[in-house]
Image (cartoon, rainbow, N blue to C red; front, top):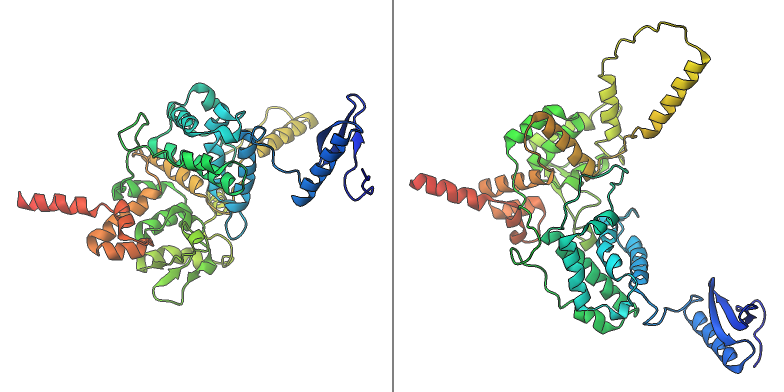
Length: 429
């Protein structure tokens, strides 16, 4: 058979130790059979033709060689590209997708992806509910700022389990579309119904309820003024925690009456929906000191910055009186102090440019502990505002303020019906 021209495609080579023929395709060695045999030459031309047809990439492995761990690795690469905001930064779904694959890789990482079925998916779900110690050790245990999280519970909740199983099924749907696994694999997995409330061994979580104003009022004096303003904005305007954390001056239209805040990134922006948050008199009073300060805030910078809170806290701190040393300072003392300061600088957390939802919630949790009140999360402020809006204005007005497409979604946030029923029966005696 005719030899290919050198330099255009990878050449036909001989492995000295085994006597086998092979070809290097995209850094991967493909064995062809006994060197010089007609069968090896046919295998060589077939491998090169498939490699060129696949865009000079090695074609996907066979059904028996394409393992679940290979599928997970490729899907995570796809998730890093797919789940991105308009500015190119990855969303939290990338981290959530990686965490959802822990049990799957631990149990079936070495199983061919084509052999993964409904029975195996049930086993993965049971492992999520049980969460044995070896899986707890493999689960991600650090936050984005590298600080350890609080101890993980032994088993995942029902809602979290359903979400993680849904991500696994979504991965096999992607693999089916990309022709990496047979179509019937996804068809079988999608038949698994989600866990129903109180009909499984999975633990149930308490529904998120509104927070009482007394608990909010106890926290306000114990947080930086930036966090205090964020809490009040959520209380008055029913904003999401992510919306108040990412607020920028350029996104606030102060010429309109009332002011209007149009976040560039929000929960439903990937659906093509717009989000407008009107700011009434109380919200404008909260925002005015931050918008009218000197020097003026940068239009495209976050309005509430942890670095500002850190600087203000340091400026207001009273310096301690230093004790007089009993002996003169030596060069060794200077070097030792400098080394200790360098080590402390490495361990010291540098305040960021913007609050994230996790840091915002941690600041509130610390203040709750100082005030000796029950901990509450920023998301509960939105529930409180939704309940007040529905009770005072109605369900339709509450839906518009919260930015929901249907009133059914608003009913999840608002608990005004329960309050109305209790008040009615109280009046009736």
